[in-house]
Length: 170
Figure 1 (cartoon, rainbow, N blue to C red):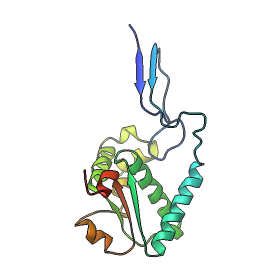
Figure 2: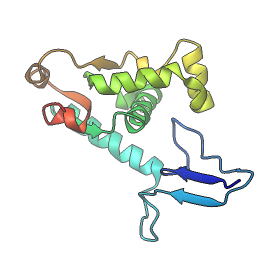
Figure 3: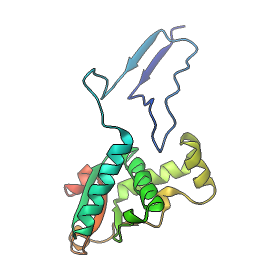
Figure 4: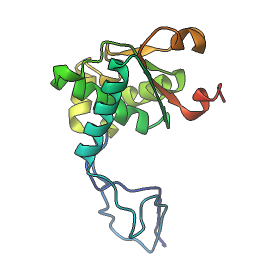
């Protein structure tokens, strides 16, 4: 018998959505890992500082009447950012944006899958979903209904959308 482990990026650090990677394998003969940030010069910003900088930028743009368009992968990154935004708004009144936070349909579909399978998520998120308080169904998020032009004409807003949707759909 020959055991092969093949994986995409493995995350050992904190995320709001998922637990750290578990790499306790009984036996591995070959290991294949794809890694985006695996090089010696791939240093990322401190996570807390990056979240704070993002929320400050969003808040500033919205308070000045602007729109924030954030292209994201529909699976994983979108839900992580939804958790960041929801946490900041819930924990600090200064981040209550007072404007809609729109989600595109692809992000909604991916979030529904996360809600359907909470056992794969961080324990705190599991508990919220199982007690009918899913962060992915939070009242701060709205479905982007209507034409894109209509949404853009409505005043300040934050729009989370998959990259293809920001370019007219894919």
